[in-house]
Length: 388
Image 1: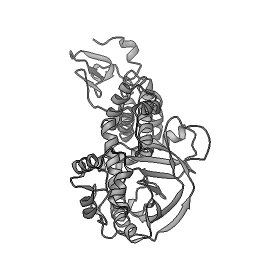
Image 2: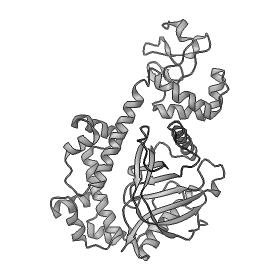
Image 3: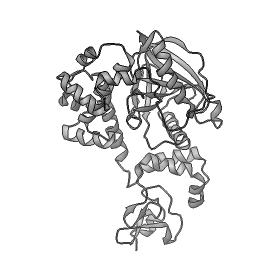
Image 4: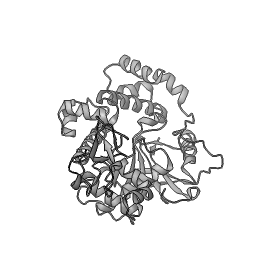
């Protein structure tokens, strides 16, 4: 039998937050010895194993997506937004998640801080002692956490970013290969050429010959639509802008999952006191999709906020650099965006008087992806540029 029956029947599953409202045993999960657990429901725990290996955020998203099922089981009448608010307050207090939320946020923020520091100092001699200070962690702890969250070790990440930055320079500039190599932090020309060839399959000079000016699609998730039309672009000088961000996990690949992620992000912004009615919603990509593999690209959901003010502890922050931007308008579903990116990087930039100022690109959602008619979505693409 399960423990503390009278108490637990009036409580919640300590994983998903489902109320134990019925006096029947078939609600309860089972331990590894197949005895009934009075703490977890059968939807979460079976024979001592979690049914789904979800994060807390994914657990909330799952129930919000199936609000009707939650209401039927628990005897409630929540709307999806109301259920999200309830679960965001309840789940962090439950046994499975207690204390984990703040730890995970601290770890993600630490990894994000290290990534930002590395990318902004990529051509310098990066000392591990400095990275530990940036992350506020010991070296052993940072190594473990970074690999867990980033999916690769710090050393592999730094090496990859350095090589991708060189490849980006080969494609985006007409600087001599020798000068590009000299500006990198590799100790010798030979070590750079060897590492570059191992990663890209070609030496730097041959890589430039093969790929410079080529139309490379930045996203192969969906086929492009020949009816997609590039709207007129314009060049605009922008001030620096403060953006609060949520890093997008690769698990969110379908439109339905993408919308759920946006709903969660907007709900958390509301809890943090952000005026969501006035915020500008953006997607920020910190990597050049012509160079960085899709599964390694760092993509952030974001919202612009008022300059100044205190830190937003629930989020990471990104400062959009001041400077010149080429702005292109796209109308239609997101599956046609790759064609516009391909046209910008493969045709417009090579023929223009500009080159990319850095690897960042940004999508400004003039109309939000939460809208049902995806063919009417309006998205502005911002590419940071400088004169050739």
